[in-house]
Image: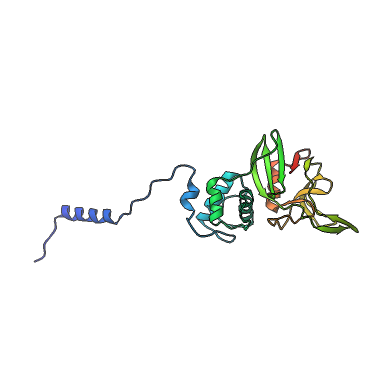
Length: 239
């Protein structure tokens, strides 16, 4: 003989079964910890990856002032350069890959400091190969750059050494286009010391590789023009 359950008993049993199947969610993380909540404890992120973990890293980089071009969840060239900039500031391998050491630098909030104290300037740190926009002593944006390689080269029949001299300069000329020259075309250059400029370039390795200019990515150069941090007469400190 089949035992029939009352409608009330059946509802109670169903509710208990549902409660047992529900896994309690963790408490929401405090504000400002989205990176720690999303990024995995292990594993690597690198160019070509995409998804919420990449977006969380991009947002954390931007929070620290490293220019990524936007948090879109796609690990492209500018994100890799931002990761390299963080790695340079932290003094760890400059491979552009988000591994354990880089995650540690993100968690620790590593960021460079400025030397200029007043007004608007762009600072170029030769040792760490970083370019920074600065307002009244506060670093605003940080870019990976590549400056003079220190290697000999020949231009117009004369031998030179590829160096980016230290000192305080001012932007004195700008070209809003690809500017052709004896060593190749420079993208939207801002000249601050003779033929030496901050300019965009298709290749920005994590080490000194230029003839003396400070290279940034093409998109980063577009941002620098738009931001107004490299207008004519603005300070460029090379240190």
